[in-house]
Length: 440
Image (tube, rainbow, N blue to C red; front, side, top):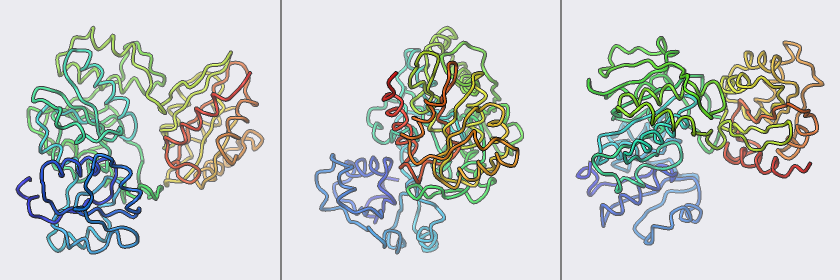
């Protein structure tokens, strides 16, 4: 690929974390390289994101309304995961012979170590990838964690040695045009997700469940016979595995004692233990790591504990299925903070779980909230047990006033964050802030 890049016109489609790391990597590899940044946001805003780039004079810009036109003028396009491959600009460029790649393809091609573990799934991939990383680390091996979890792997590629391990959390948008597979691939689960453009900051989506599945199973498409594909036992009938060349292992929920909250995390632990077994890591090591491993931030995280009252934050829960799993993780009465932007999900089963498990429901603004409310009205959930709020401060205040000894106050929205919040991080952070303000 290095020879292909030399003397070529290159465009970075979107200056997100991955393309930021790619830009730094390219600038180190080539003294003179023709790079353009295509992004709707203004140059001034984008430059602030990259303090390590001192000389911007040789970088060209395609900003504002024209950010995605005439992409056929470039030889190679590096697409951010949030930039839809179906973009008319990309499709027009492909017809003229322009190549489309991604920062993740570059990482796989140039990673000094072949020891890559890739973890994907609708939910649980971040927790699973983090737990696998910690088990490997505790076994005495050098390991790096990156990918969709928020750290671009190209940002640490120069630190990797040939015998080190790399664990990558991989989203469907990173996988859909990835031309490599990890040595060990893990798929945690599969729900209806990313089937509509719910967030203008990340407009990429899959046009059908079939395309979503194709993107997910692509994690194993380029594996060899000596590689491994680890699938949740619930996915036995979800994929056509005839063309997969690697060794396929179906993992089950683990019974190993853990500090992780949520029954669904037993499946994530089961995946991590299976990886540890493949790597011949001592069971005593993995058991000790699992026992001490806590929920990640915004993933069913215990935010605060007051006398007889607990506050949990799963702002990362953006599907009805994941919120259902959260509700099933507690035996206490639950006050639920939910709702937001609609991603085209079906809320009927969630409504049944809410009726069974939730004593009071607080809904944020958004079309998703209206659809949750409609599903609940159909099954006669009392209107006096739900309320719509304008912001997080109001939501937490009402939740605390409605609470009694033994209750759980849970942020698990089943919807995308966009609208009232920039993203799930901001939503979760605001929840944490408001909960910590409560005075007894």
